[in-house]
Image (cartoon, rainbow, N blue to C red; front, side, top):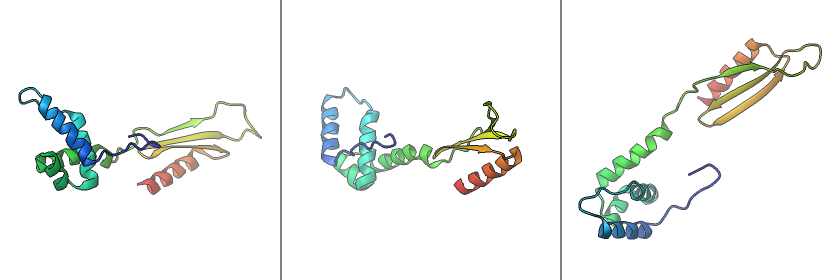
Length: 135
């Protein structure tokens, strides 16, 4: 699911129909495909694990473990790998005041601040303060 676009969560009847179709056409003891697990997880988030597992004839414990595993990357906060302070390479404006563009990127998005007349130490303090608020 991408930001700004929300896909519709299928209802349990639609997913049950997909599972029944897969069960009728599977060969041997084939594993449940990931797209069916994903649909089951979406329904379980909305309707609950027990209700979903019962309706889809799934092992409730396995559905819950898969649901928790699918949540784990989004729950872990990934620390920023890189913070860059760049001096602007443009034409000096005013009586040679330093000009900087500060770019911060984290799990919630990007922040770009353009400053003129600030020192590198000021920008370092600003970035520490901003990251402190985001934590």
